[in-house]
Amino acid sequence: MSAFIELKEISFQYEESKDLALHDLTISFNRKEWVSILGRNGSGKSTFGRLINGLLTPQQGRVIVDGFHTSSEEELWQVRKRVGMIFQNPDHQFVATTVRDDIAFGLENQGIPRDEMISRIEKYSQLIGISHLLDAEPHRLSGGQKQRVAIAGIIALEPDLIIFDEATSMLDPSGRKDVMKTMKMLHDRGMAIMTITHDMEEAVMAERVLIFENGQIKADGPPKEVFQSSEQLEAAGLKVPFSVRLAHELEQKGISFEQLPLTEGELVRALWTYHSKA
Image (tube, rainbow, N blue to C red; front, side):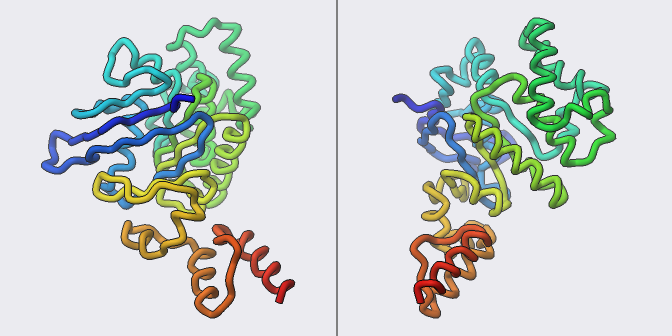
């Protein structure tokens, strides 16, 4: 089965920069995959997301989404139908005075018939839990509510993949938790998810983690493998998750784990299992 997304020998450089933002990357992603992209500011991770969405075009190499090339003006529309993107500041994505009209805007641009448009607005506002906000003004909502509205506007277009570019970084803990629950729910329903983040709690939810450094991919694998090396995380400017750090400290004291616990819940269960066997 061919990959859903392929990046082949990609290099990208911003006009105002002397350095490459991304250098000779080749990587692919499958349908329905949940990928988390980590790295310090300037590592190339947001550029990577914008290349997949077609907001940027590489100077070298090819980006292919479901068989369509992002560098082709004729095919870019097909790419955008398949890949939606949620940004750090949801206010930058609002174009209408009510939530209902904002969700409708993208549907109108795709030429969706009115009856289908009404049906999708109702369906996806209920799915995301914002049906009671349809007549509200977006700028009056909380940060978490705004991001959920932005998500509803994207999933109403029924893409195959949503890229969340630092989408939880400006939210309070409650809003962050709401958005993360929404990500999981969408993935459980068969949608591919890509999160570009500094939040390690968010990253451990993924099936696959990439670590970017200086425009290159330094690690690629399941979270339990990638997070084994605290040195690798720290070298990339990333904070080692509390549960991982504590697990490593316990292992140095002779307490071993069958699998690396990524969350506090997993750590508690692993300690309980260890204690029951002791």
